Image (cartoon, rainbow, N blue to C red; front, side, top):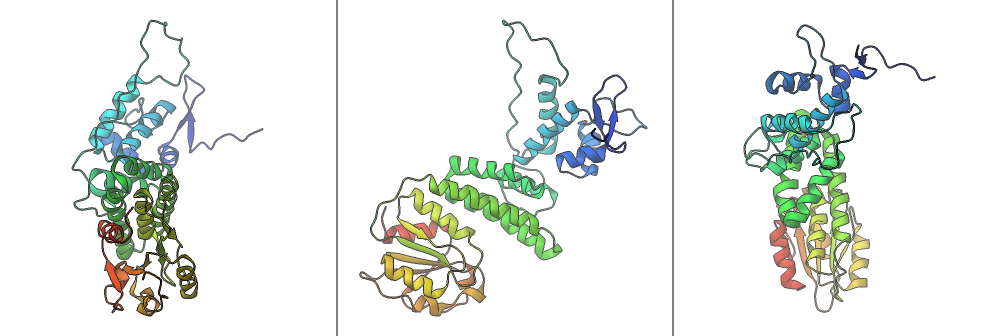
Amino acid sequence: MPEPAPAAATHEHPDTAEPWLTVAAAARRLGVAPSTLRTWDRRYGIGPNEHTPGRHRRYSAADLARLELMQRALVRGVAPADAARWALAAGASAPTPAPAPAPPRTQAPTRTPAPPPAAAGGRAGGGALRLAGAGAAARGLARAALALDGPAVSGLLAESLAADGIELTWDDLVRPVLAAIADRWAHTGAGAEVEHLVSECVLAVFGAHRRAAPPAAGARPVLLAAMPGELHTLPIVALAVALAHRGVAHRYLGANLPADALIAAVRRTAPAAVVLWAQVGDTADAAVLAQLPPARPLARAFAAGPGWEAATLPPRAERLGSLPQAMAAIAGTVPA
């Protein structure tokens, strides 16, 4: 026989057999702090329907459904007050969890209102990430990231790729959020789990987007790799996605590629260009660029990433900055 739920977590309503959740239990269900639920109730009136002043808050299934609607709107960058109004309106028009007779066939179905558009202002990054100047989509991604809501992070990335393409998704969405997470970690030492979750979601969504591109034709591909010892690969993955959707043949060789493996790949594929990514100066070894074997015609060599800023490049190598700049340089070498 299953054990009953702890008294501290649930409470059975006197008029029904439905267990109601305490603030702490409801907060765990939603992945927020209990103080957040109290704030939402006090500021925006989105709390338990039957809360009696002086008594503990208890949340029913319908209360949780409204809170989930508010959380979904916040993830999309909607201001808290607008998100609460929408959740309350949507919750009022949605069916209640209790059984109810089926409506007559002539009755139009009840529709849940669409979420309000994301506000242009409001607090950045859910109050914990510094996202000055970032758009509503980046703030929504930051909120989902801080909540460790992987499905929401992946969904926002996929929506942005479909609507805006890889370059805007990378520059306006992913880069600002990753930079804010890194800044938070540098100042507080916290947030590694957030960076890991976002990185894994980016790799998965970008990888699926790259695989969905039509196969690229071309005898001489572009080789993409991270330098030996370099484990940060998201920017060069974004470049691989951009090349795939421009129809440019390429081979992505991943993180921490040994120098001898790179040389072997160059000899085997005779690439039109080689792009080597270095996030930090310790991995930006210009000698690796100088050792690239010659090809006929000669492959162009590109040094991409902030790690190369202080490096002295060999004459045949060129620096790449932003993703659009990289695309323009490579497109001039290997037209789609």
